[in-house]
Length: 373
Image (cartoon, rainbow, N blue to C red; front, side, top):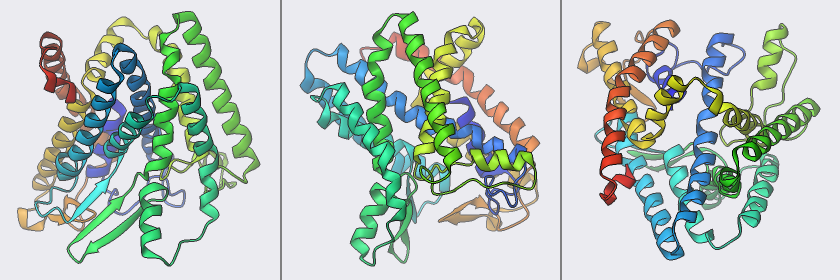
């Protein structure tokens, strides 16, 4: 939750975010690359743990119909939030000329799928997930179709893309559903790990982490399959390493999943070794993830306005609409160092709000609507 805010702060405020990709090795710097790369952990971990949480939640409910109903409603609610409050925070466009399907809607779609697969054993669910994760990169060799309907389906399920629905409205699918749903299904199948005794849980998490990272190193070294972008020897050792680590998130390639879920497994295995005070602070954010997600987007949006007005621009200079973030066409933005300072300020400001809301939820468990925020 904390490092996710860094990525969104950089996206909306960094001086080069409108013109430069931080993972383009022709123009990036190591610090800019890793500022983006470290946040790659966020989406797969969110999606995986959403699946694991759905598994653990299902074990608490004796009535499967109630569990299915909750997953379905929760999934639909997340999709609604994505295309309303989340999209508005990103584009600040009252005309809603663009809707973007990203991680919140992908999680929502995954919960809807899980609501239909709840009767299937976790083992079978895991097999389905692994088959998708290990084989979907074969589609990179399939050329685009000349059929518009086929292209729409490919964008929705497998490949990112923009669909121009009308002259004044477009639909941007940045999180094609099938690869992300597969990660959620894998999380659901792995939920059993978190029911086991701590020692066994830790052993399995470490084992899965080592296996995932070993597979990543082997497959990436072969440099044939697993990611649309092959690694190359760079201008120096650092840029060769960057190329090796520069895996594809949109959609999440096999190598992307192996690398970042591998890191996740190892982090989870050592989470209990963090100092108690740090665990407490982090858990404050983690107990109210959706509340935090929505608030942090609007705080960053407020920061954009503060930045551009402080830099001498007026309201008439701001551009809103598809792929514009309420910034002038040029001349706005802050350095990467200042991005880090704004990020830390936003995270600190959110702490008391998340603490208050977490305590409120704890004291008002009988209020059903709190389960949806």
